[in-house]
Figure 1 (cartoon, rainbow, N blue to C red):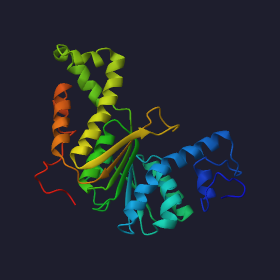
Figure 2 (cartoon, helix red, strand yellow; figure 1 turned 45 degrees about the horizontal axis):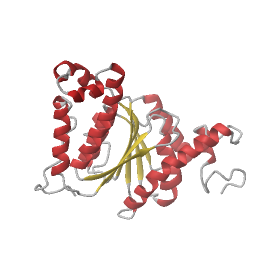
Figure 3 (cartoon, rainbow, N blue to C red; figure 1 turned 45 degrees about the vertical axis):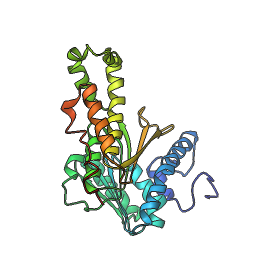
Figure 4 (cartoon, rainbow, N blue to C red; figure 1 turned 30 degrees about the vertical axis):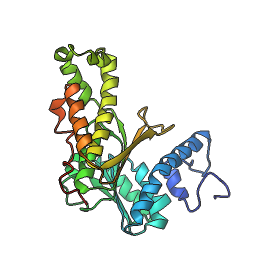
Length: 284
């Protein structure tokens, strides 16, 4: 523990904590920064076991963080885990704002975090980009807005990622389709769940995450959903963690198709595409 601040873990970079505004410029902790630090550790609590499991298989683990922003998550993961436990590993931050990509590169150089890479790419473009390795172990997407979360899922499925960690936000596509198809769906009493505009927005957001979870299950993943308590960046704090277990795909695929049909969302079938049938050879 840090003698001055027992909340700070051993070997944590004080300079990084200052850059992330968890510590003040003079190295002190106030009530707000203690809350931020608690949030950091809360998120790390969920991701660290996944990194450890991936590391047990190979030393050069690869993590891609989509919609990285200032790469807050990537820097924390590198500082707490990669720096000491996986020095051969690499974290790739994907972000479209060039000024944030450049500032992240400068900070990584300043801190000597050699295993961090930052790319100016959309999530969709990253799926086919040759700037990223073919094999990815962990995919994260925290508050990647609207369909960017689904693009991150598509990326993870294409790369056959072992673990996927999502905190979705600002999802509007499903709500828009529910709203558009409301008139012809009114004969179904289920439509009462989203008849009023505020319910359309809320139910659309909920339905989006349900569809994502079932989709991941249809690709052989085991999915858990929990709450990311107290995360200050967004009111959306649903945490979805998917671990590839090569589970049977047929039943989840049928449930996914059934949900899309019952909700009148068949036109989104390409976005929420199911996995291969159980008779097919599973992905490695």
